Length: 88
Length: 88
Length: 141
Length: 141
Image 1 (cartoon, rainbow over the protein chains, first blue to last red):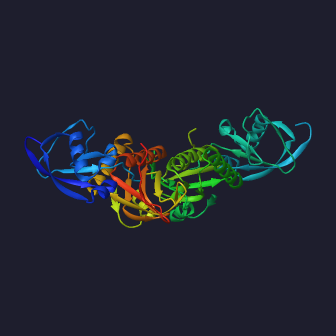
Image 2: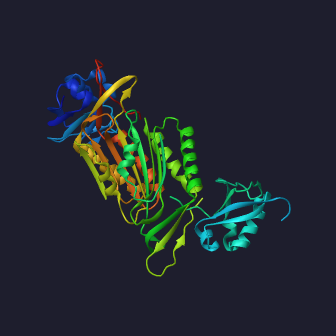
Image 3: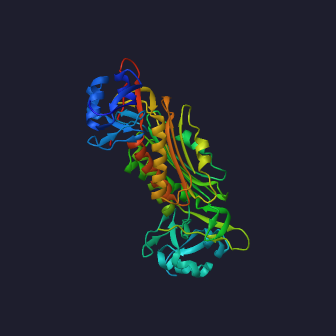
């Protein structure tokens, strides 16, 4: 990683929580990063590569609609790893 | 009326009951008659002409789909005068 | 099972939900029709319902058969209609179904209430506040 | 009014109907999603639900706003989802609306349950009888 780095909260749910073996973590991330690059890094680091293709992200409680979108982080932001939904 | 005549029960509901001033009556009707002719006769006799165009008939608890249909009566059959429905 | 009834007393909505319960069902849908307090600016105090009882029950059972033909997965069907005086805010009609999946439950209830309004021989009269003459209603086609 | 909640305890269905009551409303529609006892031949004993709580509530409130945009006549909207362990036959989700006329109530409930399944961050795991490994489910798009 190059450029400024911020520390954010990462939340894991359902299958991703089980694989990561934790419900939350604090992680240093680039202040500016393409969502898919970030997902690559987190999947490797937290053991989620087996389900990576089904994951999406939420930044401060809003879905990142497209993995090609750029995310702008501030210190303390909340990032969630979202496996396929199954509410209802 | 000509031809055989049978005695049937006639039931009145809602507005037709109020106009006829009765909920049921026994009436002699031709054993074979076109529904619209029967309705004409009953409307005149029971004071229903003001709402006649909105009435349909049911014979032994089944709607007469078309007023041009011929009805075949047996003694003791049940005929109902059905104003526009408003259940629900 | 089909539960079809004309009732004189308030409809117990908890009981309706109990009738729908089934271990194999993932979905129930319940429609409740209630008396509104107004019609064209007039204040409604109650509705008076009357039915051609035997034929109404027959038509309600036909609706059940039609639902089962269209949605064979349906488990339980409830069609209750109240008669006599129904005060504002109380239920006049309840239609409810349960099924393994949600689309059948939702679609069948919509279909059934439309059917009930067009073919079950039941009539309602609105009783207004003040001097307004009460009126027999008419369902739109 | 909008009533949006994540709950840990059984959902009281009578209370839901009370939340919908309104003198100006002629119709309420209630959808209840319950735990089924089977999936692909395996016997389900319970479901375990978890949520991204804050975001789930936010998305549930967005569904309410969307409903009110599409059906401005809606009076009350209830969206309750249960979390934790939900035994077979008990409700995991209840979606309910009331409105002056029936079509808005019926259509809005159908729409809302579809929306809930596609955008509210809630997950369920099926717990099976015997040795079968429990499985995280996936809603179809």
